Image (cartoon, rainbow, N blue to C red):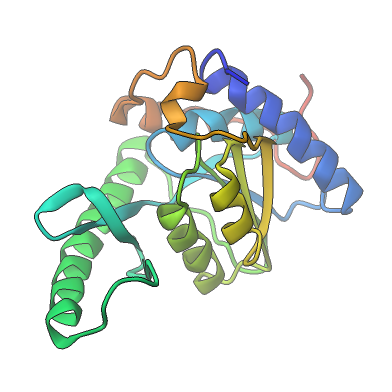
Length: 228
C-alpha cells in the first residue's frame, strides 16, 4: 500500500482509530489525548485530532546512536529521559558510560525541542494522567523511538496507551504489540523504509509542527466527536 502523503495516511488511520475507540467504549468520554511524534508523526496526528476533535500534543523521542555511526540506532531516549535499548547492546562498564553520556545529551536536546514547540505555539502541554493516550508516528520500522514514547506516556500517568501508525513492519508490530495496543493501516510482508510507502514523503518542518499545535487548539473538545 502506498499513501499519497501524511495527510491522506492520517485520514485513513483516523477512521480506523475511531472505529476501534467506539468498539472499546473510549470515544466521546473526554479522556483521549492525541500525541504526534515529531516531526513526521505530527501531520498524521493532526488528521486524527481533527476527526476526534481534540488538540494535537507532541512528545519527542530520539534515536540513541551506535558510537561513531549516527545512522545506526541501538536504542532511544525520550524528553522524560526514558531509555530503551536493543537487547543485543553489551552492558559492560564502557557501554554503560557511553549510554549515560548519550542519554544526558539527548535528554537535554529532546526537552528543549519539545518545550520550544509549545512555546512557539503559545500552548501548554496536556496532562496524560488517567487518559487514553494515542501516540502517532508516520511509520515504524524497529520501533525504538516509539517504545520510548510508550514508556514515557505511562510514566506521565496514561491509563491506556495506543500506538497508531499508517504503516509498520511485521517485526515492529510483533514487538510493540506485546507492550501496548497497536493500530495500523498496513503491515506489509516486505518493509524496507517508511518513505517507500508514501508517494510524497517530504520532510516535515518545525514550522508545520508549530502550526499543527496552534491550529488544533481550536478543534472541538473531544467530549463530542468532531464533524467532518
